[in-house]
Amino acid sequence: MDVSVLQQYAPMLLRGFGITIFCWLFGTVLGIVLGLIIALIQRYSPKPVRWLLQVYIEVIRGTPFLVQLFVLYYGGPLIGLRLDALPAGLLGLTIYGSPYFAEIFRSAFRAVPEGQIEAARAIGMTEATIIQRILLPLGLVSALPALVNFSIILTKETVILSIITVPELMYQVQRMSTETFRYVEANLVLALFFWALVEAISRVGRKLETRITKHLIERT
Amino acid sequence: MVQASSVEIRKLDKFYGPFQALKGIDLTIPPGKVTCLIGPSGSGKSTLLRCMNFLEEYDAGEVRIDGQMIGYDSPGGSRMPARKLRDMRRSIGMVFQQFNLWPHMTALQNVAEGLVRVRGFSKDQAAARAAEALEKVGLSDKVANHPARLSGGQQQRVAIARAIAMEPRLMLFDEPTSALDPELVGEVLNVMKTLAAEGMTMVVVTHEMGFAAHVADQVAIMEAGELVAVDAPTRILHSPEDARIKAFLKTYHERNAF
Image 1 (cartoon, rainbow over the protein chains, first blue to last red):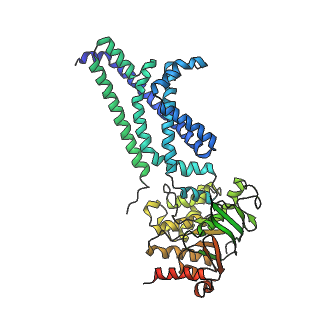
Image 2: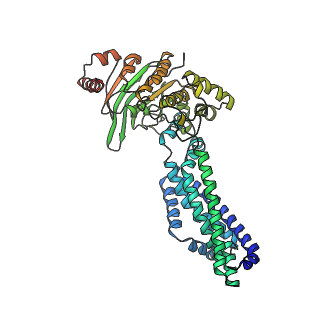
Image 3: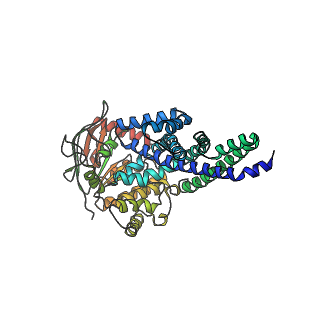
């Protein structure tokens, strides 16, 4: 172990970690939004639309993130989509996560008892109000554990952004490794940072879960 | 006295695929009266009830609330606009077997929600009206409780409060006491009796023969998607002529004999 090398590279590594967190947060939030929109459209639209969205879901879920990123970054310019590394990475993460989030929401919405939706319909609520007041709040409760779980998986997908030269943590670690041959130290730092991030996310997730299920648990 | 609707049902058919759940039902629900639908499970009584607010789409025939057809523009016509259907549903209250309270809201919020979102009340107005409705069902001390902190009987009374706060002219009850522990049935039936005494038009799918016998103005007996008989409870329950009614009452009496 050579601590002095780590000290020397610390600012770079920290900056990389910052970019990693940014990419993860951006991709997760937009992925959740996109997934939610897909799930809602699927719930309320006719068969052809549902089928088309299902094709999107299957294609994205069925191919490696690495390949999707290559297609977006290197293939994009062929159809006039010229993106810098960071925007391409953010867009890629968003697209990659969206079908998983869509499926999480789809099953969460199905877990909302039909009777509670019918009760809202029976008093004359509009579908938009039902979504806003009943479906979303209750759907979110059952979706939350799976949402947290998949967003944890997404933290580790960010390392793939290094191959299109997004200067996130993995990129910096590789740079440090090739410059100093300190592979073990560099990757140990990477592992520690990710472990800390994941730990923080799961703690926040558990807090949120306790808070939003507080009133739903029967206490006798 | 509340304003009370009437319901006329003519030649009503309902299919689930090839299975015919309702076979040409003709039934008139007079205003301000209590009609109990009874019959063995699977006989179509819940389906019939759910056609009255169009939670169940019917395939042929008519369901009219105060002369206005619900669900379709005209007999055999196209679906009525969603807005029109919502307007009709505002004056039809419904109480479900499984209560169907919204678990993320308190009792008060459950009752106030429709007032705010559907009737356009302000939050304060809605809260005041909701508190009144909850008082009427005897739950003034439970306004702040979430459904998970209420007994089944209390939950069902909140559900009734949620419906009556909207000032319906017709109340539909779909086996309102079937999911309750026996000792909690009475409190719900008592609230329903109060409503009946106020002159609310009520249609009640139930297995509570006592309620049917004492509170109903008319009893309709269903079997296998058909209406077997419609008459005053004394005549139907005490001196049935139809063999199918006799058979149904016999199994009922055997089940409850001890």
